[in-house]
Amino acid sequence: MPRSHSLRLLPILTLTACISGPSTPTGHESPSATPVVIAPPAGNEWYRHAVFYEVFVRSFQDSNGDGKGDLPGLISRLDYLNDGDPSTTTDLGVDALWLMPVFASPSYHGYDVVDYERIHPDYGTVADFERLCAEAHRRGMRVIVDLVLNHTSSQHPWFVDSASSPTSSKREWYVWNDRDPGWKQPWNYSSTPAWHERNGAWYYGVFWGGMPDLNMKTPAVRDEVKRIASYWLERGADGFRLDAARYLIETGVGTEQADTRETHTFWKEFAAHVRQVKPDAVLVGENWASSGTIASYYGSTQTVPGGDELPLNFNFPLSESIIDSLLKANASGITSTLADMARTYPSGVADAPFLTNHDNVRVATRLEGNTGRLANAAALLLTLPGSPFLYYGEEVGLANGTTNNDEAKRTPMPWDSSTSGGFTTVSPWFPFSPGRDAANVATQAQSSRSLLTRYQQLIRVRQGSDALERGGLTLLTPTRENTPVLTFVRSWGEEQVLVVHNLSDSTTSVGPLEVAGESAEVLFTDANVPSLSKASGAWRTTLPGRATGIWRLR
Image (cartoon, rainbow, N blue to C red; front, top):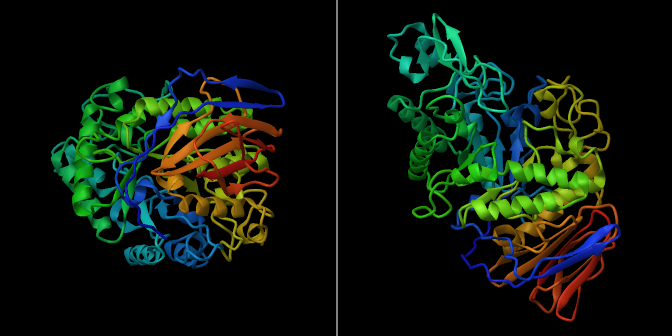
């Protein structure tokens, strides 16, 4: 359940750290080096410290026996996500849900919308959506939905009208040209054309011809998408995840197809509208780019605390750094990314870290099913600053399916090990991922040492500490050091929490850590982690392989 907090300041810390262990070089940050410090998020909005859970509705729970998940099915599983009772420990305990596209679409994934005011018929009705929001709110959870504004389906009535004639009233709702300008997709040196022919003219569709880009330079289009946002906010939505936010308005070829000034201007306009309709609604940007580019989408922090553009932005570089660091047993990738964030992000913005999402090979597969690495991943995600996003099934180690397509990243949720997986009563819309005899909710709920239990415990530890939930970060691990240990302090007001992760399989000594405090209260430690001890003004401990220790220092 949400808790009330008051704003406090991040204290100034003087820190040095030394980390050593088997096959681990001893390192020491130069006394003159400036520590990496990330300020706590400004503002008191719920989303600046929430734990989000991404749901692909089609794969979560089938309620009507057609093999496809739907909104009533999701409602039936809300108590698993958060039962609304802070005294229980059997639910996951997340604060908010992100629904992948639920609007009417000809595709299974829904990113090509044909009607922004109708729920996909496989999923239910607008009334079902309103009931989902009401039930989630009753349990203390918020609901945000995927809003795809960069493009529509080529089957959308707007586009059908627009393509019908150069004199159509909807012609300027899309981007047309009399000839093929020859542009390609603006990523990864793509050779895929971005312009497509229809009825003797060419339209712009940066992803493919079935997804024509809306023309946000047209005032009527801008007004319409703001009206659509109001429609869903008034029906219970608490905000939107904004797909392909970088590509909204193109002004030329190449670098002018992404991250344009006009795109930023529109998002500021859209954000102001959303704040006016629902002041605490959130916008989450998908800007798959470098830290510096992501930072630009927060906008100005001068007039709106935390930014006047998109108040949350997914941290793609950190996602890659976490997985790479876990595979290499080397924290330097994470520390470098944190340093990039400290250098480029506006002070006081809220990060949106994640491990993987619906566009990525699942983290369990990327980490080769290694239970120690998966334990590390959970602990890292839930101790770093910002608002973490879990992808459904990550909490039980759900792996990719066996096919080489996006559907394999979005397979049905395994609730138990039965033939139907507790997901449906018939054959599911897509086969289950392998390994669900162990990677399922029912099995893991029975074990105090399961990955699911670990996620439950870490979420509760995070929610029980202002420093972990809302605080800033001061990095203790030197950014240039190759070490398997990641150490940092999370701070909020007078509360300081020391966090230590061992990303290797070997036992490693940690210290000396010169951090203020005379006593250490255990918030979370893995098995066989000894007490944190202090001698000669510095803290020391030893961590077994893949272990985490979290202590509140007083």
